Length: 408
Image (cartoon, rainbow, N blue to C red):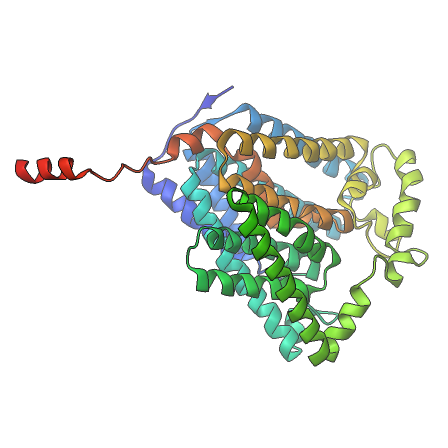
């Protein structure tokens, strides 16, 4: 299914790409409401609607699932629309959903080189965000900390750590090709330090579980060398963490505190895990959901799980839509990889996969980077990527070179 729309000149296409890259650079700055990135992404969306050549069936499925989920968010909150905070949250959710649609529309028009440029921009943005978090932890600057944990300019450490993972994977991609080894290694260390200093259990879990798998896939043609480098990397990481624990009491205290599956705010009455358990009968009793922010009147904190949140806050239909979106996203990721064998398809898939542990411990529906990655995954057009690959001409033979010289 393809619906043709007018195509704008290449200058508009390039302007849209530059604006998107600018939005990624600004995405870690979330202290303002609305954020600077929101305005940039809305401009990108406007240009995407105008210069996108066609909508395919995959975009339609993505649009329908996300649209149903969004309608459920609004419908469940009709009774509390007079609340100003509810109005603000609904508007904020709408903005981030539009970021997802923006990513999908942009992805439909991109070739492999555009995704690689995005990856490079994300590396820069990650290094900037991580440096702010590292600076905050080293100096004790509360502007870049939350409860002694690095967060940079994000609202929370878990979002900060999750944002750095795609940048880390981008550095690993360049290192696997032998490109800019000094810069790649430096970026890798900065992003890794930022993730560790966030002390986010979900982000650290993704770092130590998904990163080795991603590294092996990148270097699957030389597994022996890849495994050797991986073991060296694990050894050095453990050595650095051990050294930091011995030299920094603050770091040591945070590691000991966070190295658990359940802190007091997880296991106590009304804690995270208790809220998960108590939410099940509430979901069964409220098929249309409780509504935006209404769970805060029952529990001391939000549910902090995107799947339970969709069912509990926005209703059964929203929960089913989100489950379908998650399951189909895995299918789309496999299709992208199988059809193109593109390292950019692998980067997007693992960047989004690394957000999954965070989604189980947090409501990620307000994360711009999550929606952007989700949209890019669904907008990754295999035919476009394959057609855009430029075949490098083979070097001329000695005979061909002699003929060319004589002709001149």
